[in-house]
Length: 354
Ligand SMILES: [Zn+2]
Ligand SMILES: [Zn+2]
Image (cartoon, rainbow, N blue to C red; front, top):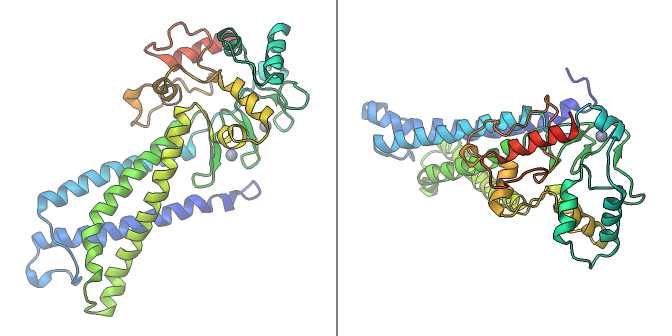
């Protein structure tokens, strides 16, 4: 089962996530909600033993149960989609295997000049050239095309080799141990959905658990009851608050990355690099992905806003078809067009003949 070295260890992280989810969910339903439902249907003598159980009217209980389960199911769907969807690997085509790039020498010279003269403005003309190139990023020392020895192919812009997955990942953002998968070109949308739905679910949980949590400060009437009812509530509430704080910050960070047309790797290793040349190289490469507005930057990554909250692949992220959205600018006449990303993919396929 665990054919690869460390494969089992890597599943420990998602395993831990499911244990935490099961504990919080079980506590929320069994200790917080179930006694409230019982109160409406049982005789007072059969009421649950929890002396600190809260009461609510049936309408409120039904509202909480439906609202919570809608967002909770979305968490599970986006979690599995982020975990099981391939992040996108370099197509096994001769284009990438052989690296048969046709780039005019004057275009290469222009990029070299821009890298060497870091104060030179990137003119509109230079931007048009950068946006038309199949590959902009180069090896730092030699200036040659980037090549991955392990995968045996040339690397498209923004792709990086993940030592854990053992493959080059397209538009690699980062390797996420919690989903045991790389987050890249094809599953970034699901990763963002996971973050957003987790935030909403945790907000919901913290709000719904709050009245019962306040009751734990009432005098302890019996220690067995405290251990059975109050302690799990204290733990579930505290973990939820902690996770909510951490995840809200993380979600905000990723929203700012999308707004600036950045990946985590680019933000950490390039934009904030102390090496001015690395920063300059990123500035030039980023021209290829930077759209006119923040909204279009979001569309470039997440597709049509109609589907931002739905876990469907509607952007032509079809790895089997050999597509790779290597840049939004190539051959797009109307950037605000209705089907922006699909159009970019189609044009790229024509351009690359893959
Ligand atoms: Zn590789
Ligand atoms: Zn990985």
